[in-house]
Image 1 (tube, rainbow, N blue to C red):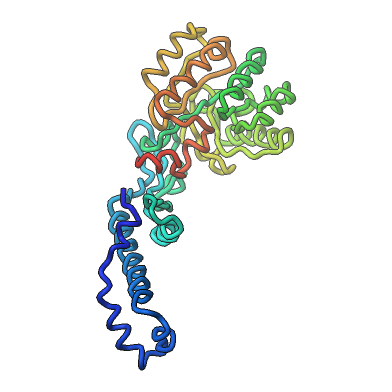
Image 2 (image 1 turned 135 degrees about the horizontal axis):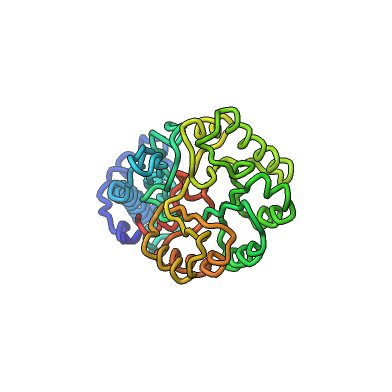
Length: 328
């Protein structure tokens, strides 16, 4: 790393030029009042400052990371964009001047991509950008609530926020349970109203399924959903369009716990450990298997350096601070 003091040893030959100009320069009176030692010191400071700025600009070129545009993958469909980064030269320079003798405190600012998810409004999403070290739990809730409290406690204990996709009929039956989810700081998504096979419904029926649940979520929880998860992952182009009309993007999963088949919790953790990577969206439900595997899944994600957050956080373009600091 560069040391600010290294630039303070610059040559001050220009001091004599300043002395010669003192008789006619507008700053002549001030210059004349300084001793030659003071002039040399002032010139040395100026030269060191210029050298520091030049060094920051040079290093900034090496530290630049370009943004990643959103794209459409053959298998995973719409892949979100990811911010790049560049050194904020002015902010870095000001910080460095405040701490002479220390390593240069590089400051960064984002570089926005040219294409975002908005560029592909009718494409479903299965995963986040693979350059972003983040992952999310997608918890679809359409039946029962006996395992929900323990799962919420586990998430809270680990400081993890998830996205819960609520079936409208479940929400109508268990509004207090839904409020627990919201009050835990978790994101609320739309999971249709009666858990239908969306691909077998006409456009108006699909609109109704999504709209009824959206309205109930707003009325009951006071939040607006921005993500729609089709029940059982079954959808067609009409589904994506119907969700989009109501301000939502259609999201599915990257990894499935298949917890409805009642697998051994250890097997669930092993499966997630093998498949989880940056951008992974993990599907589960409030089941006994996921309840008992949840802590293990959280541990696996953290060991792999992934930040667990909501679907919105994982799919956002925002560059993670931890990634910036480590140079990723």
